[in-house]
Image 1 (cartoon, one colour):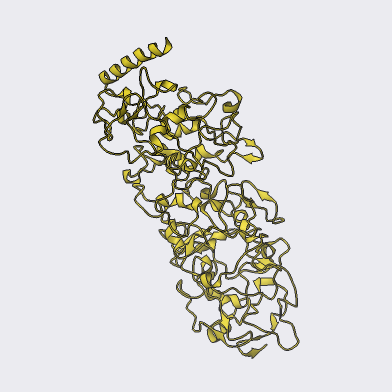
Image 2 (cartoon, rainbow, N blue to C red):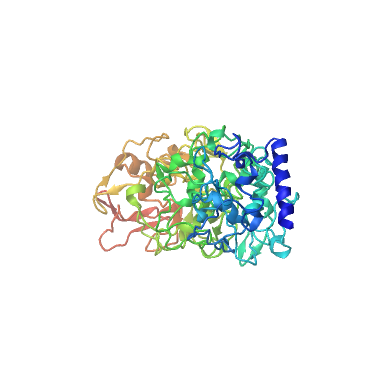
Length: 613
């Protein structure tokens, strides 16, 4: 009796559909509304048979027998996808959409000839598709609405997004009978997804911690990707929405056939060589393309210079990896940026605070180098994920230029913490305020812009890591490129030219020397000249009257005598003031006497450029 009633209901529904403008859209294989058309005249009969269909929904399309060997998984997923039952709700959808059974293979009426094969819309990879048909009962997760597991309901105010028999199924998000409920995204959605409303029916931005994992979406509602009015170019293929904010989650995530399976990342096809999966999804908008009608700076163009090393197949980023990147030297976009939290940089705040573009990233405390900070408060804390106590750091001098080898150095010379510590003898004021008791006659009142002339940010008591390590064309200091240490044409991802002398042997003649000093922004001392008046440095009346002689006559670079970061403490006769810490690749001992320097007498004991001091 119920089946008979449904048959009549089906008949009238099909008739009503034809009278109301064919809301079935592409699912109506009987009209030109669908790019794939058959020979049957009734739209409903392609999927439903009034008397002879399969048990669920009087189904008329031949069901798929596909065994899905790969289902969605990630290192943060709490719920496990299982093989869809052959006749459950989602299996009905898969009978056309997994690509193994052509549409129109009807149980009751036999196959019908189609105008063309269905070449799009196939769910080719379930491991790269939003998980459905999950193992019950559903498990709670920090980024899920609590009501899913507590009450079996979503937070959708329209009550259109629903669990099906307590599970996530295709029809939780899709209404197969109405293609255009969402007028701008006609993808059979059960409700409009403007500003990610459909996604946020199950995923929440409420701060939650479940199974020790914090909700990564906590700052989503104020993030640039949730609020940006930047206009999306239709060629980007992100649907009909107009702005980044309207597109929302779909800017970076794809619900079906995602290029980056774990995380459902919207990665390009083909993928970009030698770039990790988690950074691929950022490329579409941040590579200077026309994906946005107001293009953002070309970050990926900076990596083509001397850029931070991407992850590869041997050391990929994972969402659950430790904050301190031991034996895992890589720099993915998400190591330094949180796409769910980052805000636009409309103004440059004072150091040492984290910049808006890095809000919500992880960090490491400078106090001990091991305490993790989630999130980081100061910019340098994020840098310490790799440049602090982490093990397995490399020294790729071919890519980044020569490294000095300091007379006073920690056991791990790539650990910058000892040089910046409170106990350090002297250092640049990155992790503590500038408080040197010695006069600073060369210090400029303001940092100079990239032209080396125009004053920029006033000199304060702190500086940022990015005041030295920055894109060579960054906009903070007068360029047109992106800010931050993405890449630079100068060695060690430095914003300006900073030469490091080499020698024939320690104590021998200097190679690559720079006599007759060029003190301009194009000269070998340009980076130091950003904050220091070089004419004062080279003046006989400076704090060290022989500066001029060393530079003009010998061509010594600043790095021969000075450590750019700091001096961890007095050792071996080097008192450590004024950042004096000789590069022992360049200088040598004077006989049995250790290399030494005394600030009090301004004297040194060493051999350099073939001369004994």
